[in-house]
Amino acid sequence: MDANAEPTRDDARAQRLWGVLAGLLVVLTWSGWITLSRQGVGSVLTIYDLAMLRFGTAALVTAPLWPTYHWRRVRWGRALIVALGCGFPYVLLSFAGLRTIGAASAGVIVNGSLPLSSALLAVVFCKRRPRPAVWLTCVVVLAADVLMMGGGLSGTGALTSVGGVACLLLAAVVLATYMVAMEAWRFGVRDVLVLVPLINGALLIPVWWLLLPSRLSEATLSQIALQAGYQGIVVSVLALVVLTILTFSKNIYTASIASYYTFYLIERFDVSVQVSQYLLFVFLGAAALGTVLGGPIGDRFGAKFVIWFSILGVLPFTLALPFVNLFWTIVLSGVIGLILASAFPAIVVFAQELVPGRVGMIAGIFFGLAFGFGGIGAAVLGVVADHTGIDYVFWLCSFLPLLGLLTVFLPDMKGRAG
Image (tube, rainbow, N blue to C red; front, side, top):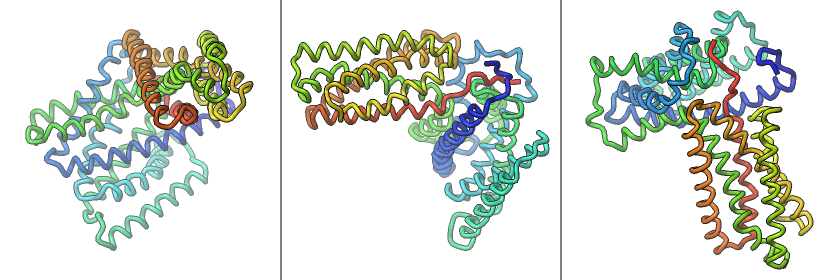
């Protein structure tokens, strides 16, 4: 399908679903960030130290993407607005507000004002007219925000600084600018991963080094590592982490079947060792066939569709496997092997598109690291089986494909900067 074609109704529904689920991840990630940031501003580190750790670490992590990025196509004015919208102006305003405002109250202020700020900016700069339902939602969220802020002000809560509230409100406006600009100018995930840390690091770090107050030398190594890790790494490597977890879930299930399926059949159905080996071949043969078929299916329907179908679509069959008779165990094991293995080519291709020019690194992650963890997982399951029984292990493994829900957080590789 042409990337410029109008989306179908099903495509629009899928985009809305992914948007909602991705939004939930943003809430969880942002909640952790604001909590750790509140801890950070209460430590010996200055807010400028925290901002430097955030963008300096992120720039180092995403540096492997620089050589293959399409630099000649970058519109630097737009890139600067997008980068600063979620960059150090937003971060410094948030840190300044968190000095006097508690994490929970700060979340209420920013999240409550963000929808209305985004809607207003979309009207002014994108000439869009949100539907009445959108305006109503913004008003309801803002009203709830005001009520919760009022409760904090009337009691002995954390809302004690008008300056802190003002900083957080400005931070919401700055972040809303980023959200509107990113959508209007069609910046993709890879654009954000490369440009945001690089631009913010290049602008902030020299000023921090020469002019801004710093107490980095007084902080402990654990404080620095915690802030650098969460501020700079969590968001930057999220997509690769999701792909690795998906591969891990597939590999550990496959390893558990290959290692313990024969024992399960012998104990559950009292078959001979020879018959159990034949039945194991059904699973392994289907897995080999699924690996072969996964490639052309991914070329036809897209890698993300195959990942969705092969990892999450196998869930009903894995959940049913521990409860069916011998005949259906044979049938389901073949179906599971066929569907589950079809994900691997799509995962590897998707990862190579996400980090082009780094074939060796991707091969190391998905052929070495993930397979190794799959083997370790199988060994751990062996210990569990010794203590609880083989039936319990197979029931426990039946839930591993639930990790396929993480597919919703993978980016759309069609997105590119305008």
